[in-house]
Length: 263
Image (cartoon, rainbow, N blue to C red; front, side, top):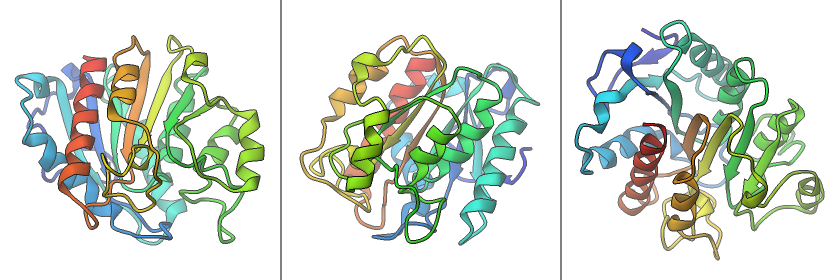
């Protein structure tokens, strides 16, 4: 149905997109990961964990569009496919927001570029152990380590919550972005990006770049319980090749909270 997607291993068999509030897209891409790859396997692993949860009739309002057919090893072309696919969503529904299952954090850029055209005052709130605001990483401008800088350069306000690791360059750049959730106006169209390494490794050991002294899941749950003008969301950087059960179960809980925030 959508550009560049295939429908496999779905959360919901609902085929009525027009009556749905959420459209799920998996993006199995991890080609810029420089530590421990394996994030490409997370979209389906998160789906499996979600299907083990008690969801009642919640999935009746969820349309699972399946997984993006990524261009292996090519972040630029993969992001363009993702951007085109998210734009394509408007051809079928004006109400369903995209919720993305990554994959590495780079994919947020493709989604946000598509949503920027729809929401002129869009803001991005990223939960992440890292600032991801390097200007380039190993000579590459498009990377999981540069994604929030590329988004900020689009003129989109960026908030990073939970960052506790970064280069001197990133700490300097971070002076220009918000890091306090109390300063976020959630009445504005908001895109939430949840990098699973924002949590302490005790709660999410299955990530490629773990950092100690992370936040608790309840901290994010409390924010998701707010009245958020949600334009879209993603859950990224889970790596089931490292650890599948605890981390993907938490990712599934986050997905459930996102659904409830929208529904």
